Image 1 (cartoon, rainbow, N blue to C red):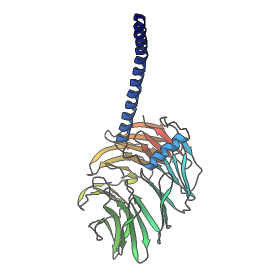
Image 2 (image 1 turned 90 degrees about the horizontal axis):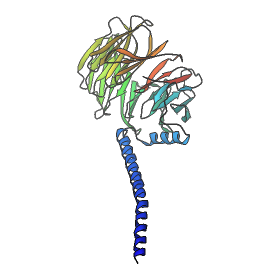
Image 3 (image 1 turned 135 degrees about the vertical axis):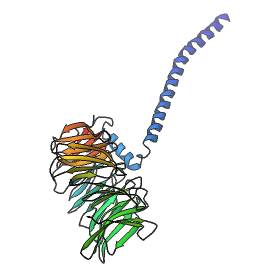
Image 4 (image 1 turned 60 degrees about the vertical axis):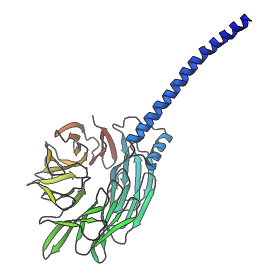
Amino acid sequence: MKDVQEQFKQDDDNNNQFERPKSALRFARYLLLLIMVTMALLFIFTNKDKINMDNFRRLLAKIDIGISLGSEIDDTQIDFEYRENSVTRVYKDGIARLTGERLSIMDNRGTQFLNVLSGFEQPQLIANNKYVLAYDSGGTELIVTNSFAVLFEKTFSDKIINASMNDSGYFAVVTQSDGYKSSVYVFNSKFEEIFKWDSLSRYIVDVEVAHNNDAIAVSTLYSEGEAIMPQINYFEFSDENITWSVDFDETVSPAISCKSDGTICAIFEWGVCFIDNKGREKSRYQFEQNLVQNFDIDDEKYNAFVLSHSVSGNSTLVVLDNNGIMISSTEIDEYIKSVDVMGDKVALLSANNVMALNILSGKISWQRENSSNGVDVFFSDKNSVLVVSEISAVYNIIN
């Protein structure tokens, strides 16, 4: 009997010795699962604004073709055939490219997600993290897509003059109009027409949808005798009448921007004017005798202007905030042919170099040779810039 009890005790000891590693392994698995779930929840929280079906499908497409999602993209080059009047823009983690023949959407390694016929004579392209909007300037066709499909298409009865789209996917389209000087149509992100203004007396030059999606700012001009009268008009969608107008004695504003803080930034030949969303002028900045070589007023916080005493002379980069206060002014011994703003950085492109400048310090923090003969520069994200030429797009990591 004693021998049997000892045997049972020995078996229990052996079982305990086997159970301890199993318990430790089980605990390690649970701990690893907990860490993975926590990281997934953290990723979802920090990227909640970017999580949608379109981005999810892009991710699945990358996984399906075996692309390494975490690899560096420095010097990655996307090649394409030369096409006259082609337009390339940053779209999500890749590009959208529009030619007279077709619209293509691809990621940052050239993987193509969408390729549709366009048939545009004067192709124009707008892209943000929501949609891609393509239209034929002087034509009547307009389409809106995501990465994989045409979501909306419309043939207008009159020729399209221009269009714009805000970060929420609301967009405005300006057309010529039979019986009117111009018309502007506004669509929401579900592609429903929510506002229209037929202008009897004013030509519409530019239009922007406000960030809160409840109004548009419009640059217009009308004539009184031989005098040309520029205006900035503001419409709230709840009212068919003009909410407010600001008159100018000088030249027409060819470009306006609605900022996230409600400021309307209007650029003129003589300078730039900042107006609040009640129609009160906040400030002006005069360009003096300088010419504007390039500018970017689309960033939420800053506005960048490349000024020069001549059309192709050396440049001065001036950065203003939305109150018209100069943040920095930097002399650059080159002609700057493209500029883009993101956060506290400015990307600059000359014939010889692509550069990144810190707005607060006014100093160039990164520089590389423009070896691809690029004509445009864009931030693809806060740490990389895309240099676009007539036959390629090259990614550059900012150190």
